[in-house]
Image (cartoon, rainbow, N blue to C red):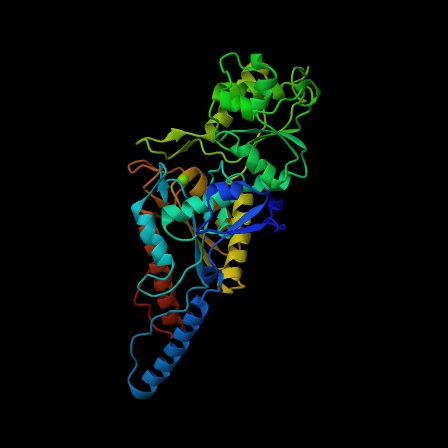
Amino acid sequence: MSPASLVVPQRAPMRRLNSVDATTENVRIGGPTVVVPPKHLMAPSDAHEVAAAFEIARHELESFRSATSSPSSPPLETLITDKFAFAFDIDGVLIRGGKVIPEAIEAMKQLNGENRYGIKIPYIFVTNGGGKTEQERCIQLSQQLRMEVSPGQFICGHTPMREMAETFKTVLVVGGEGEKCREVAEGYGFKDVVTPGDIIKDNQDTTPFRKLTSEEHKNSRLRNFAEVEIEAIFVFADSRDWASDQQIILDLLMSKNGRLGTRSETFEDGPPVFFSHNDVVWSASHDLTRIGMGALRVSLEAMFKAVTGKDLKTTAFGKPQMGTFQFATRLLQQWRNDTHGINSPPDTVYFVGDTPESDIRGTNEFDNEAENNWYSILVRTGVFQEGTVPRFVPRATVDTVLQAVEHGIEREYRNALKKRAISANTTPAIEE
Ligand SMILES: [Mg+2]
């Protein structure tokens, strides 16, 4: 599929829960659900009005100055809210090992107006992680960051898979905890979702060294896989059992048309495999990086080659795919419009991430194709380790997400001063 076809999902009729009271349990029960911030936070932001008021005041001050005194230094630019925006990776930037990185809370406060210029700056979150519904992840993130995070400003690795629910009917969903990813896939509209547990329940000899726990056995659905054709394989989240998951994926890849128990003569009749991202390592609680979904992908491709002698082509979503950044552009546009009444795209989007191969690479490549500027900022709180040279070079490298936010705001301020100096036909006093 072409990533360029990704679009922001359309709204379907669904329940609305207040994010202050909503619990994971509430969300899970009772069909399609959207979790929204309290009404006062859903009201249009007053950032635009405040900025406009500042602008009027500035003009008045300027005319007052020019009428009463000799030329003075240029007044400060205040109307910058609609000129730039931020996008954040989550793991290794805001959260590490399930715990919030302390500077992240202050960084969010600055974006929400607690900065030296008193401006609010729109922002979104773009993570390769997954394994939960977007709503559940936003509830968790809201608690961790101590502020409201709306699904309207959030993309995770498997969000684009939503658009494939119409293309494939019976699919194998791999990864994540318990039945979580089956629930996510069904929430996306997939009609018939199979898990590795279902396959092991039907034939426990499938995985000689893995037996289902009593809970897994209870949750797994009994069916006769001799009669089922699996049309596609989706790795939604990290596999909890590489050996058995890879065995099952390999069985399907070597099958005739996704029917378990069969073998293709050419090994070219298996279903396609999609990964929600391609990060080989990620930043967890351990001091050193841990292997992730990209490593499973490498392993699977190598194993297929070793067993069949053929090359396996798989597809990965998430960063650094351009489709994810196009998706992020549309989400940001919708978010800025809905919450700030801004219709035009920002001149610059500051993307803050910790992984050079996904965050920085994707931002830099998208900067080349986008009409506006995408400015990559690498933080030192995650995958990237000081003393190494990142394969993809960021526009700026800083210690923490707070410094990243301050860097973007100060850069905008300096640019505004420079523009003013140029338009006043004077030598810029401050270099970028
Ligand atoms: Mg990260």
